[in-house]
Length: 475
Image 1 (cartoon, rainbow, N blue to C red):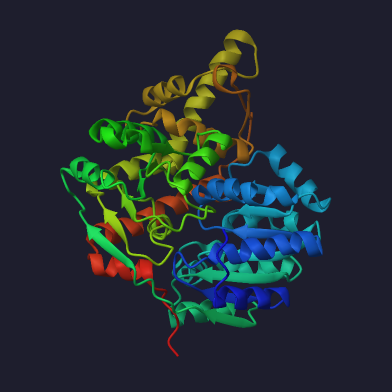
Image 2 (image 1 turned 135 degrees about the vertical axis):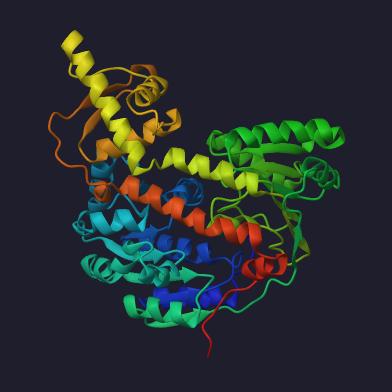
């Protein structure tokens, strides 16, 4: 955007430019991401080194990468993603690009970096590491996210690059844990409060579509967050029918749109041609849209980070803005089912593996082929036949195959109707702790489980405090 950096952003950038590892505590919406985006660009263009951005959840990374590419590709800066979902071929290609100086920024998770730090370090080109939502380092003492407790080793093995740890919530104890683990030289606390924000608490409202229609009819800039691509399309269509006078000013937005379409929606919203966007979490990150008057959480976000990022889009110009809470406990159950599909539990994976082995051996006995072709539905039905007590949702099949392939238990080639699956004859014992994809999914479920109670039971004033001011260490 065209807005100047505020004092604390400039202060952190000055420390980083001097090579000083820094912790920054700053409220959501105050521009933490801009700090490390600017410094990473500086590292690429001035120092010709690679930056590594570590995000707590795999789900956050794809949208971050999209917007980073949009913003930085014009300068010749390249961005890549490495997570448990990355294929072996993608991993090898990206490691080679880092070593050859052709990859400037890598987005990853703590689990992936912890297990594969040697592959990053082999290039000798890692000059900047960002740990976003660094308060997880403090939480890791209780056994959650143990990969965060590895960052002292990780930083050392990477050759002691400059480190930036960022969070909006660092109590004295958490700040102490971060400082004890990382080689920090300076801490910057931005205690600014976003007093222009309000929370309108309508959780559990049975007539939320009526409420939403009245809000959209005001014509004020509004972003409505939903939890799936299909829902973004369906709710936009509903609102166009319910508020016909505003129909041409309502659009949907999700990661399934082509890059050109996403950019076109962003620009129309920026110039006022559109007044309402119905979106998944894909909208907003990396886009300078300061004049959003209303943010609506129509469905429950998938965690505290999404909650903060979505809510933090409101009123960045300092003018009054409202966050409307319209989700309910029913939305929480939907989220849990979605997360279960993308992160199958151990029992489901056992049943799935048995089903795959059965189908593979049967096909090989009949045809002699060492691989077989089957749809997700076919495989899910075989799971049901093998163990009706542990049904496997068809949407979980692809995730399970990804985990098994990562562990060397199968090989998958082709897509959709041409997908073929070959199982490994004697793969040995399954060690799910060696699958980054499994660990990332497990952490997502744990994060949502912890967030769910807070999102449903906290009072509106406590929620506003979480959004509009940081938690900083006591003096």
